[in-house]
Image (cartoon, rainbow, N blue to C red; front, side, top):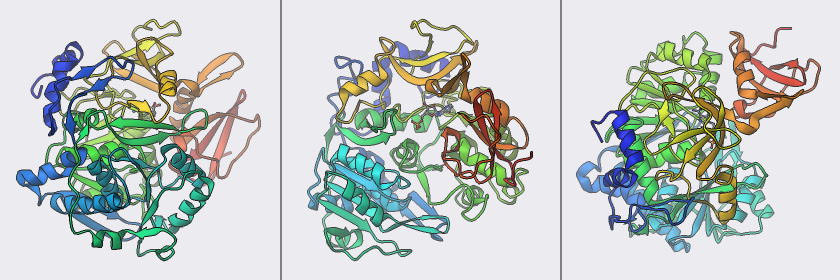
Length: 578
Ligand code: AMP
């Protein structure tokens, strides 16, 4: 597997999935190694490593300490918003996680119980996730930017035993009172967790510990006996991560322990080319799937050093935030979203700020989360002078479905394509009748069953909805909901959500394709197509659309054409030229 070319590896993963993933399972330490590799009796949900037992936290932490690597840095925390930073060796992180697991245990958390985490990008977020994994409990991380109502619906769905939060989050210059948000959420929620554990931050101390709150530091100080790892079944849930869903009711994507650990170990090594001891930085948030997979579990299971960044691409304090951290900690690769780079590019179009920093440690820039537009690709490739590698996946899949496998067999990059199917995934482009569209012809991007390890196993508490949402459109396939095509060389092109098509005067127009045309204009920094009014409307504070979700536009104009509005943010944000 290690020395094989992509073609050989891919062919084996599809021809002999059980043998392939049985070998890959050796990247993980098992309490009881699996003998039943793939169980398809539950199709369309495939169960991997059904009779295996393991602990995910043990794989992420303890095993590295036991192997003599306790002094290696596991976690680097950089927080430009608070002006603080910290480093945790594997030994220290294991110790802190084991103590916090003891705190959770004291508050009644045991295997299978849920714990909601509503935390900013601080080490305690990683510690709390791993502490849940240590107990065999199920964490539900709710993105810190979500409002009380979103938090409340997630609490009512997951029914957590405990909620863990912090006294505040920090957004550029603004301190956000998390406890007030949690209070509001709990007032809206029907379910009331048994305890609320609060990490008090010096930037803003929340209300004194009373009324059922537990102070994180006090509670940890009282624990003298570290909590051991609980062996769980491979199929036991590790976490629930909510996606917004189309009907308003969020979908709780469930990830298992065994398949996930194997997929994380395999993908760090072969998709991202990160080996034990490498420094790696996924500049995302722990509230998203990239944060789960590639800030926390992937790099730690892989024995690497991960960077946790409490800052923004721009404004903390400037558009060199990324490059400052790269120069200081010298990661081998950076993984972020095109939106983040567009924000940087907007403020530093010539790369002058970037040029002030030594970013020579970077061997690769990985981008995912949305379509990588050629303009952003070009800027990054020119100014970083490293391969810019797109990878396509979803919260549901948990790890890349299409990528250019840097640790296996790097191949030429085609701009606009995340390259080829990752071993384990069979990508098929289907038309409305379920037939293959053929090379170069657009259709629904579907994945043949069985899905490989690491993909969602159900929707929390709604298995019927899981089947209905993903497996009923085309018999025998997972329906990704994205549209795209595969070219003659087998490169995949993902064009956007199938439901992001707008019907205008009988024409089905892909918003992604229109956005691409507009964003090709050198003066345009970012744009989003929506169905709009038929007059010229400069808009302030347009609510975030898919292409704009990381930032609130300041100056926007709109180009109106035939009932479609294309909202545009100008490169330098000084009003739109009329
Ligand atoms: P999420 O589950 O929120 O991470 O969103 C997943 C969706 O983002 C996918 O279904 C795609 O529509 C889009 N997406 C993610 N990565 C890419 C990519 N590399 N290229 C194109 N679209 C992407």
